[in-house]
Length: 69
View 1 (cartoon, helix red, strand yellow):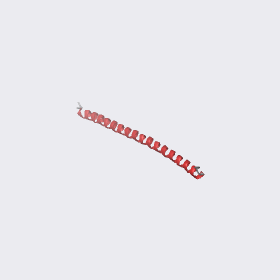
View 2: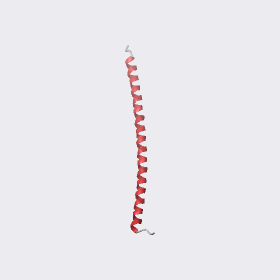
View 3: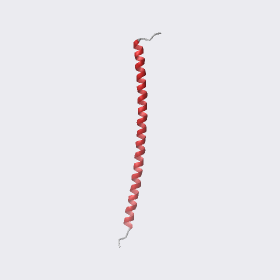
View 4: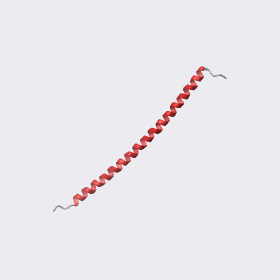
């Protein structure tokens, strides 16, 4: 059974769309990975800020405990 030109053209179009869908799936995977990296960076920065705030509080408490002579 031979296929008509329309059937062949449709098959090619379907194949191209399937390839495009696969490409979009990979782009989604990459973007999700980038989001996870950004979330990790955000958590690290928040932890660093918290650590620095503790350090600042310790310095302020030490200064408050110094008695002027």
